[in-house]
Image 1 (cartoon, helix red, strand yellow):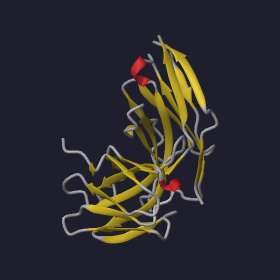
Image 2: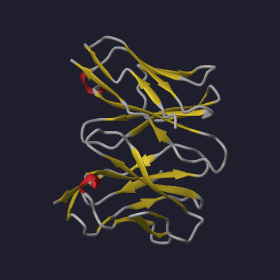
Image 3: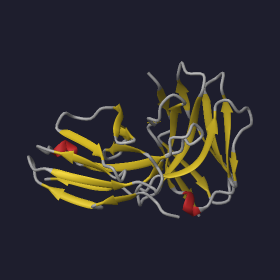
Image 4: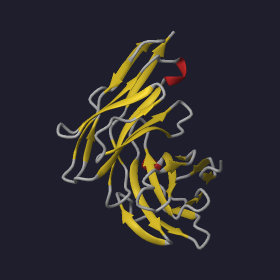
Length: 114
Length: 114
């Protein structure tokens, strides 16, 4: 079965640079979520999109922005990177029917800021 | 605000034995869903088991079962016949039925010894 695809899997950037993370949800899933997991921490919700509209927002820095495109893939744009942005970034997708509350996670993008 | 608490930072168990991981949560919602996710060293987030709050029957998936106590807001995971491949970080997670943001507990590192 198709899974959530994230690219790139690993990314190394320097401070103050910009990074773009991409997420391709499971086919027919219309909702995408982004989570950030720091070293030794639990995943923290950043932002979500339903049908290309932002549906919820968590602890996402103003330096970050995201969007969902017409093909339902999503991109997380991160600017003015800081050392503290080094983390594993997960994308998850789900189908919005009332009984479809399960979120399926991608493999994550490991971002290292030096 | 919803919170999820896992009070056991680390647990260990001998292969083939049974272990129980604890989780408590706080919410004012009446309808919600609870999950246990497994994160092995690869750091992939894998859904282990789910429980709908409106169901009194405890969920079971092969060797994994839960003890869901709604009044006590407790949701423990029992792993029977532990296997070496069960070694991982385990996260308890919560979603209210009204929207899809996952809130995770701090995680429990489970080590299965041969």
